Image 1 (cartoon, rainbow, N blue to C red):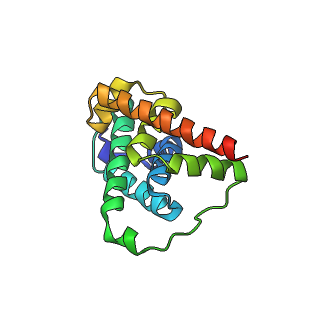
Image 2 (image 1 turned 30 degrees about the horizontal axis):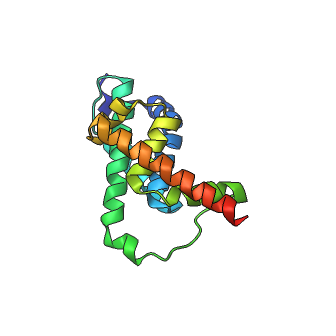
Image 3 (image 1 turned 90 degrees about the horizontal axis):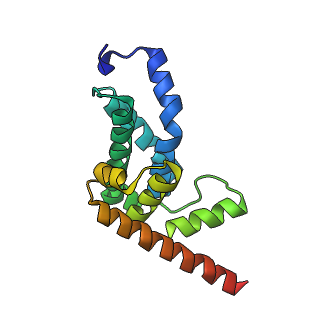
Length: 158
C-alpha cells in the first residue's frame, strides 16, 4: 500500500508517534506555540503526498521538513509583524531552561535536540540537516559551551 493511500488508523498512529517530536523542534525554533502547531499541520499535509522507504526514512524526512518549515517561518514577514508574548504557561524551571535554550542559535538548538533527545549520532544529524559530521560536532560543542556559560552566569548572580 502506498503512503498516499494510508488509512485513518495508520495516519493516527503516525501522528501519535511523531507529533511530540515535531512540536518540540518547531517550538524551540519558532518560540511561538501557535506557529509550531501550524508547522506541525503543514508537515503532516506534506507527508501525505510522499512515499517512504521505511519508518526511519519517514522520521528523518519529518525532522528535515520541520526544520525547513521553521527556517521559512524565521524568514517570513508574518513573524516580523507578530507581537512577542508568552504562548504557553510553563513552570519556573521550564521557563528557565527554555530561556537558556533560546539563547542558542536555531541550528545549535536543533542539533542539541536531535542528539540528546532523539539520540541521533552526529553523522545521522549531518545527513538530515545536510551538514558535514564535523559541522554537527562544532555546533554541539558551541551549544554546550554557550549553555555552560549561561548556567554558570546565572549561578554567579544568585
